[in-house]
Image (cartoon, rainbow, N blue to C red; front, side):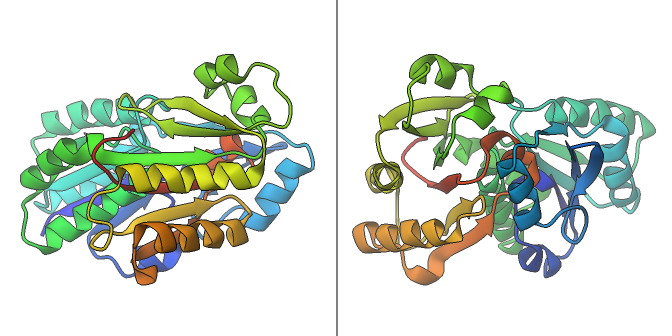
Amino acid sequence: MFAIVTDSCSDLRPDYVAVQSDFVVVPMQYTIGAETYPDAPGQGLDAAAFYRRLSGGESASTAQINPDTLMEAYRPLLAKGKDVVSILLSSGLSGTFQSSMIAKETLDAEELPGKLYLVDSLSASAGEGLMVHLALQKRAEGMTAEQTAKWLEEIRPRVAQWFTVDDLHFLKRGGRCSPASAFFGTLISIKPVLHVDDNGKLIARDKVRRRSGALRGLVDRVESLIENPKKQTVFISNAACPEEGEKVRTLIHQRVGVPMDRFMMSSIGPTVGSHAGPGTIAVFFLGKNRG
């Protein structure tokens, strides 16, 4: 069985990660105030404390994973003769995937018995997590590492990821959405609906006056794009607003027909939360396309 390696931006729940085998999550790092923490379960700040500090006016920043850190994760697996599929944060949002290519070049020269396959998720948060989830399923079905990496790249354009933020200030400050900034300008009290496009970049799509309208807009996108709603797992993530995540879950169930037990509910971790801010709600699913 091959190994799967991802980064902590995949925002997979700790209880989900704990039951996987041959599976590694490499922590990213974030800085808030004067302190730097690993984005990893049981380390650093818990979600409530992190978002409370952001709401209180503190700024947070993130750093890409460097090649040496990734080599430390890959090398022991490859040395054991295990092939590795590594699914990483979108190259359109971070330099982490570039770091993985540098790491691969070094490891290839070492001629270790295992083979490393890199997959640029062109996704973030639980969109990346959804791709990891699907890779785990394909591994369990008997796919090889090479087959799984190729399959992930084939379905990647269908990994739809839509979200709304409560305050565009965080995205603007982090420089993560210049198209969104241009689209919304200095509009006040607008609740934007955004998505991650085919190039793995954040794009603003709709502007809504009220929060309730933005949440309905997410459900509208699921309804218009989703394929096989009764047979797939829909991921919903929130940044310190779990009640609204549950509301979106119920609306998708009622309008689209996704069974209530086919949702993966999770928190948005500090890596994405540093840029999206508290009050972010996101949905991830396989669609006809990304929208």
